[in-house]
Image (cartoon, rainbow, N blue to C red):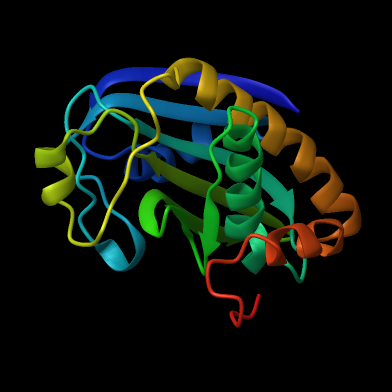
Length: 196
C-alpha cells in the first residue's frame, strides 16, 4: 500500500489530529501522523498516556477499508506486526489482550484502534505509543509497570519498518481475514488462557 507521512514537532494528540483531519487524507494510502511531542496523549478509554518530549514513538495511522466481520482484530494485527519487527533486532515482546505489548511482563507498547463507519466503508485510525528512550524517572511516572526498548532502536527506522510490514499484513487481512495470523498471535500471548 502507498504510505503518506505527516511529521509534526508538536501536537495535542496524533490520534485526535488524525480523526479531525481524516476526510482530507488520501483514502488509497496509509497516512502516518507522527509528533515529537504530544501534550494531550491518550490511550484506551481516554486514559492519559505519559508522553515525554522527544522520546518514544508517538504515531497514528489512518486508512480506509471495506466493512467486514473481523475489524476487532486490527489491534492484534498491529501488535503482531510490531512484535515481528522488534524480534528481528533480538527483543521478544508478548501480547496482552486487547491492545498492549509487554517486555519482560512490563508495558512497552500501547495500541489504540478507533473505527468510523461511513456507508460500506470504514475509516480506521490506529494510534501507537512505543517506549524507547525512557529513564527510570520517566518509567516511574507511568501508572503501571513499564519498560522501554533498548537504546539501539532508531525511532524513524523502527516506525518505517512497522508501517511497511503492517501494510503487507493489511493486504492479506483484507483478503483472508485474521485466520492466517491467529496461531502466530496465540503463541505470543502473555496470559496463555486469554481468548482472541
